[in-house]
Length: 128
Image (tube, rainbow, N blue to C red):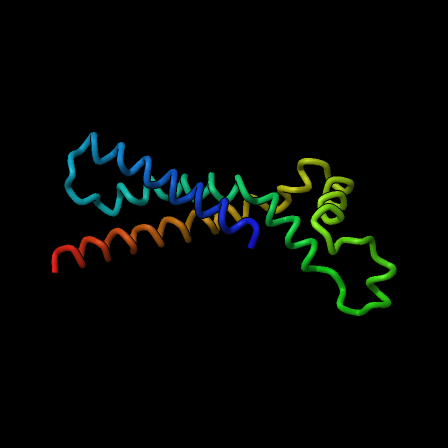
């Protein structure tokens, strides 16, 4: 959850700003799906990458064993500080972004299709 709010703020805020610029350049007409794809794919990638480190820390925290005996032998990763320290010690800055390429590729597909569907639905509802 901690990464969700900043992710959506970057994602929707940047998309909205770029969309406004495109509308100024091309007029107030409805955007084509190609325009929306061209805007939303890189915006989704940037938004995801900007918050990926938070998601890594969250994933480390969630991977804690539920068994108390096993938890006592493991490093204290149940806090944000402990999980952050663990990731830093194992990989430095790069440790926070391990697996980012695959995850960001998925995010590009999801965000692009989500905004195309949103813009198309909005256009259809405004016609009705």
